[in-house]
Image (cartoon, rainbow, N blue to C red):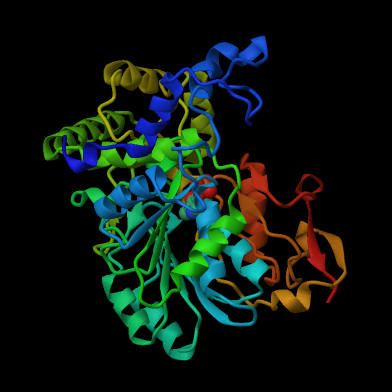
Amino acid sequence: MNRQQRTPLYTALKHHSLSNPVSFHVPGHKYGTVFTDTGEEDYKRLLHIDVTELSGLDDLHQPESVIAEAQMLAAEFFGVEKTFFLVNGSTSGNLAMIFAVCEENRKVIVQRNCHKSIINGLQLVGAEPIFISPQFDGNVRVASYVSYDAVKETIERYPDAAALVLTNPNYYGMAVDLTEIVKLAHSYGIPVLVDEAHGAHFALGAPFPKTAVACGADLVVQSAHKTLPAMTMGSYLHFNSQLVDEEKVKYFLQVFQSSSPSYPIMASLDLARSYLANLSREDINKISEEIANFKGLLQEIECITVAESTDPVVTTDLLKITVQTRSALSGYQLQSLLEKEGIFIELADPFNLLFVYPLALLKNFAEVSKKIKYALRGVQYDPSYMNISLSYALPPVSQSYSYKKLKNLPKKAVSLENAEGLVAAEMLIPYPPGIPILFIGEIITKEHIELITYLKNSGSRFQGGKLLTFHQLEVFEI
Ligand SMILES: Cc1ncc(COP(=O)(O)O)c(C=O)c1O
């Protein structure tokens, strides 16, 4: 057995479960023996390994044995000083890394198209975000990465920033090599924190994009559950830094994570790392070939096309397949046609459908391809829909007020049409992808209103915007 085939945490858990233990401890389901009849069948096997910090099973917040060993194997594989297992998703990793590095009233340079957890972290800590607008990819029609020049200009203007917070790849798998940006930030003593939620598999190397770890980033958060065979919420935080205090990271991890971390989730992180580490070149080549075939089949369907970035600095993750409408139907409408045939995709936007391919061969490839073709059979080719001038580029942040100043200001509701020029009192987040299109404290522009109206009318789901059903937004009375 090679070292990376070892799964110390899962093995210890399995061993415990097979020892016929009697439970006078939490959780209350007692290895699944106490459960409602409804659901018992589905939960039973898993509940056998759903335990608590028993002898021999270690403690996530003070790891000394099997969890420490599992995290060490992960750190070895990912090529970092330390890997921390996360049981509350990348959300908890993003919050912990921001709290470990940022402080109240300190400026923090942030990529505009980031997940809401980054914004929540900055807001909670009371930092002053300096947003960098991302490039807009004309082919895929989404915000992509921040350019080296944009980062350089911002760092030169704010050389004493507490951190540079990047998101790479974006939701659609578009990634850039961050090496030069990291070098630049480090030359100013600025630590680089990367939300790599969608890139847990990038450690495999080419043909996948380069991981932020290999680019020298200080802290990197990955949602293992998004692209690896790991349970939902299972994520990693990688520490590799001379600039960040490891003790602070550990402290905030136990602040933001449950004191009863799920063993099935942690063990799935142990197994997922082993799965990843033991994928052979041949396995990866086979998966790549199959994905190329899958794209070929999609390309045969007239009413859609596979959209890819042609930006030379972008490498797109193989597992992310963006399909664009070539019909009078929006992405959302095509999504509902697929769902009628039992095909569920990751997300839709006004123009696109996003498929996330498994990191494995698809067992029912032929059947799935047939179903997709069948679902879209009646949709006519009509490329004119793509002439809609709506810019799904995120509007640049026009002006921000400090979170501290806004905290105690009164709020009021205004109709969307009358919101231009007012200051947003709520974040508005289409979910997925979870990237806010309006921040608290941001001045509302005509572009915001146009985008919100379009998304609302075309069936996007929002988090925030509780008054949107009445066509209203909450703003500050300033
Ligand atoms: C870029 C990005 N970061 C962070 C998150 C949060 O990850 P999690 O769901 O693992 O908490 C997401 C979730 O979609 C995301 O897309």
